[in-house]
Length: 191
Image (cartoon, rainbow, N blue to C red; front, side, top):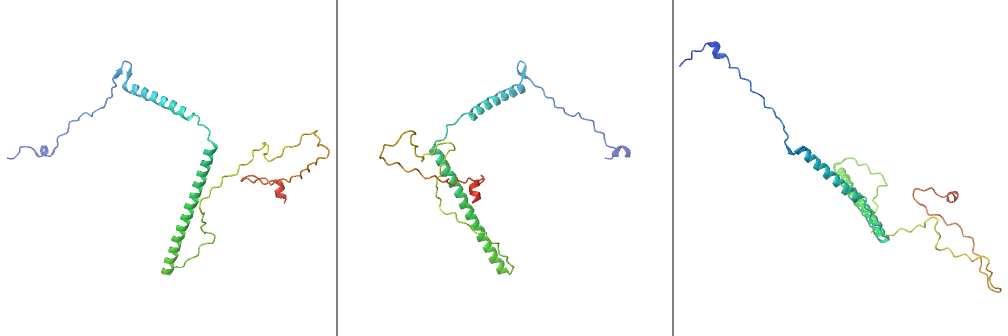
């Protein structure tokens, strides 16, 4: 069947009707009189945060007992062992790098490429086995020396006929121990 539409009507398209765009509205319903759920949650989080901070700060300010001399010695030995293990690791790394470099040089020679020698002074130093020697205790400045002999009491005369002790020879100044980062004493510098 043939339609009775005019050519103008057949080509025209119907115009769409506008549809409303959806809108989002947020309404808060109070959980308790005067407070919304969001405000209540925020208040709860704030209180928990303050309590957590107070608890953490009390733990931070707690004093630990001082380490005993034995614990300090064990800690020093553990630090020395860790440093020695680092030296061993560096030595093993150096040796493996030398093996890789030697293999590279051998492959380059086989291929006919020119090989330049490495600069001298790049040898690996074996640290040896771990031996712990505790550090010497340095005297405290201002403390009396333990090896000093007590001086004779003044005004006490030796009995007649008793041998008088020989006066001690004047002590020469022992060289002061050199500590890293401190300037050398002036007397040592003059020699």
